[in-house]
Length: 296
Image (cartoon, rainbow, N blue to C red; front, side, top):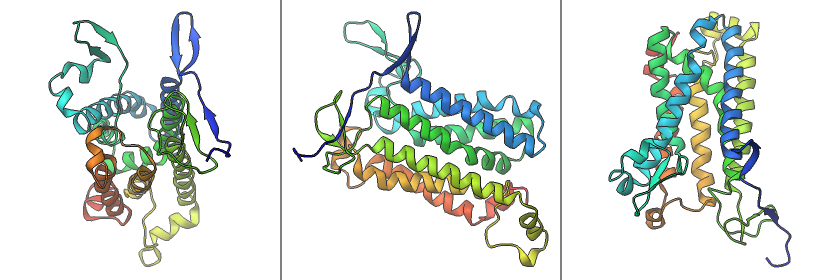
């Protein structure tokens, strides 16, 4: 190991300053991810002839749902023994210290599983308000969501957090803010997977818009096995299946986030991913509830 050259990783967590205000890479990546989703969703809505009036509230619903769900998910899944005693800290981005003082820390801990649940609940409320079909909205969101997940994992990489196990692979990163051991860049693995999933979902969607594919569904006996029309639940299923299946495998390269996971064969992230993988398969193959809630 000593003779190999690894990637030394020690970026400043601050991207730039606006006067005395620090703009950190993690927050910047969140903003880039959310704005990318906003712009791509706007394009989908216009292509599908859905009015701007129904589109406009979506960003705030998604932002609040993801942030609240991700925060509560981390607190309840990974550190319940602390946060159930300090419930205010679940909500406020501050920490109460033994000397009685409060310090701004930001939200130290966001769980993707909780964020996914929060997003689904937020979209349900959004659909009740706008009277749009829930499966149609979930499919649209699923087409573009991986690009946001990719941006967030890049933010984790810039923060040198969610690091991998020590390794001697030639692409190992030395996270000098943590230690001087070459490690798997688990954040980068996930970011690359999510970028790939975005292009896969987007490519299938573009194909589904072709005239010959649309006509195939109009003649029942010629319809393909999988219903890839937006509103069937296919894209929602594909998105969560790919994201959480990859998460199960990539977790084997990453350090556990909390101490209690050290005694587990499969860590919390892997266990929480299993229901999403199963739900994804159910939606891909057009389960009963997808047909009931969908447009077709």
